[in-house]
Length: 94
Image (cartoon, rainbow, N blue to C red; front, side):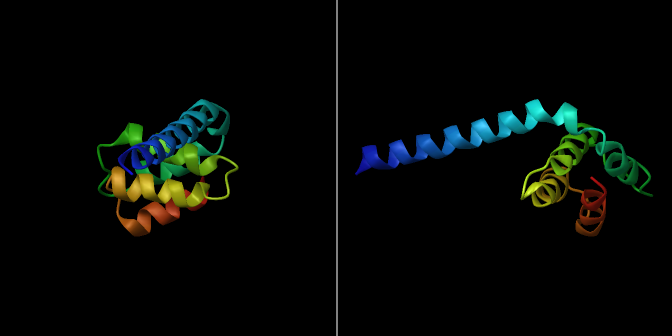
């Protein structure tokens, strides 16, 4: 039973790494839409200090993924600690 759990955990971690790696590799191609998202966040009256995370979130949101906007919101709100309403608005621009 323990080896089955480890095998499943390894498969999940491996799949997540492949997905994240693919998103980061494809991100430079998607940055045509990222400046609107990043500009919106930079124009905030109280911008956060996580500029790299903001850029990654905007790039992921600009990808043609079914869950791209949701992933952008997760990165912006949960990881970069942008307010939820600003994260949603920025990700709609991506």
